[in-house]
Image 1 (cartoon, rainbow, N blue to C red):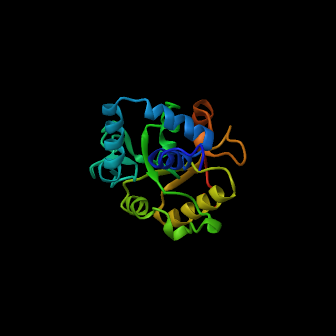
Image 2: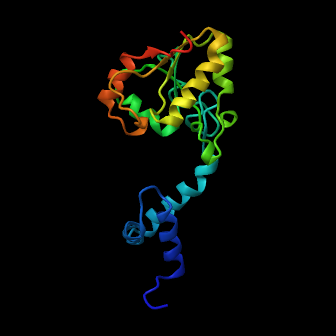
Image 3: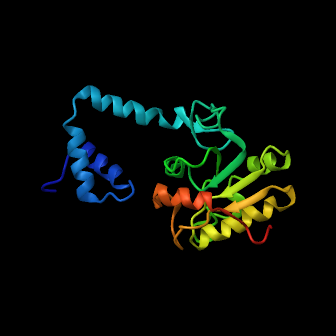
Length: 205
């Protein structure tokens, strides 16, 4: 076919197109940019990607990104408040909250939110470790920093429900959080205000 790129180049474009927000033209530009790298830089990228599934693991404490099966940097930080846990959907949302400079507790990543249409049911969420810590008295307050869409609201109600009998205080981000918003895209100043003004979950208090 006229104008078709070499097979390996086409494969690279196809892989890049699977990234969020990347279309065919953007994938082509990135592929050409990578092609212009020197061989050593290209090999280094390949090595990093090849090792990613083995080297980058989930923290056994919170499910954040960690290295080689160890705890993440936040769980290893002795200055963090272990009695305060912020529950979020994905590890990618941590940095947004950290940028607010307000929260000094630890995190717990659910691995998504309740989305039946996408096959994500309540039982598939990562909740066991959180519930165990709450029952053992290690955690005193759980802050639900979940998206303000229908799925996030349903997930918040579910998490609050399973924590009900533990006696743990369950709060939710408050002022400044627009309805339907995804935590991943809320600016740090808004998150700081929402965190400082967090309120109790109605069906718990």
